[in-house]
Image (cartoon, rainbow, N blue to C red; front, side, top):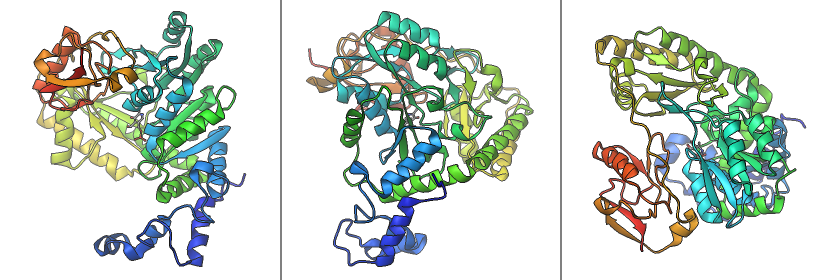
Length: 483
Ligand SMILES: Cc1ncc(COP(=O)(O)O)c(C=O)c1O
């Protein structure tokens, strides 16, 4: 295919050239109905792309024209049998994948560190989850990969398991051995889904881990918006048809997406694909080189470290996306949370996230050397200012996974009540509770609260840690199943 084409962009341009009297939705009639203060800042042209299913612009939910062509071009670039554009992020891609893998009551395997969208997929499908816990890399205090041996063990214990989802690369750039895991899944008649929210760039550089599709995954969902240049909320789901039921996947995609998909987002996917196809190698090489330079310089700074290839081969980590800079000032006695604050408030460097041990800085093709130099200079100054601090002690290990008494779906839709947090021990949780970061749920809906989980969460909430999932984020109360 001619990857220089941009079918969706072109069809919108063609429509706008005709400038018909417009009586459809959206009602802002392109720039005319948009707030003037906003127009003064961003200009008018962008609003011409906010339209709907006109005779030129196809229909995401029954694509046969410009969107279909744009999706076919994307499928070719990523090596998929088919690609679907998503306007509700990889969140909806994960939901659709989980719902496609298993019907109500069937078993599906999810890593315990899965994004919460996997849980939403479980709630919507009624599938029965079994969990895999990624290994912990103790030195860096981060979760490693899922090993093929763990996956084989899982299928021995749950031979009826219909599919497995793996997050690879993770937020921290950690990859599992997808090729070997795909073989294990397929040998047990199960499908492999990869949450590749953080991995679309991997298809464009040999210096990065191989993409999931090229290693035998059946479906992958990618946040093109995260590091490959499209607008926030736009993602793609790629599939190979051999083991996937097309009608079921498409039905599930209808279920989780708006009937009014945003054409700005869709166009941004078409344009990002174009850039990736015609100069992706050159663009992503820029990110790889910048990150390499940053890692070397950061590792020269006393008492500051940046994780690198030395962690590959440990904790189930089979490869590393080196454009993720996992940076620790633990030797200075500084938690990642504090390092993030100082970097932003005092040095104007805004990193993606922090945890107890580390901060995570993401380098993309659109970063420039000045950005990286600013980060290096900030870290060098922090190293001087805080020299002599007592090195940080290791973080507390996570408590064991509690027993599940109900599927997430049954728990989610069962009558529940709000109770004081102090009374939660021994009750069945109606909600997921995950300290964030790293976002690993310590309890899922349908699991019984153990003393160990309660104590861990209690200490976390007292320290003012950020929690995802509970209706009361301060956790003064929590929701439990009415018994
Ligand atoms: C591992 C993982 N999966 C899925 C998602 C959801 O992706 P999106 O923001 O594109 O909906 C995220 C978001 O951060 C993520 O980190």
